[in-house]
Length: 89
Image: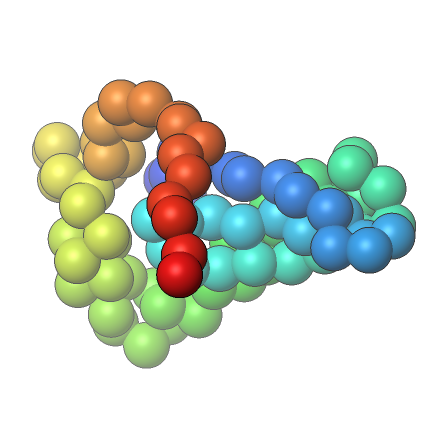
């Protein structure tokens, strides 16, 4: 069993908390922040397990920016999180 690190963005959509993992393009939700965190962990675990079962895990992780280091994977380097604005006509 290997451990894969990932980034989680959590935001509110109405009364629902949405958890999103940009590296893997996986999302989940919950009624609370903590429930969304638990659910995204399960969703990512299921996604990675299914990918491993199909034989596509390495390909998916490489496309997501992960780097193979021996028997483990190094996640993409997190640089920053910014909130920017744009003008709309």
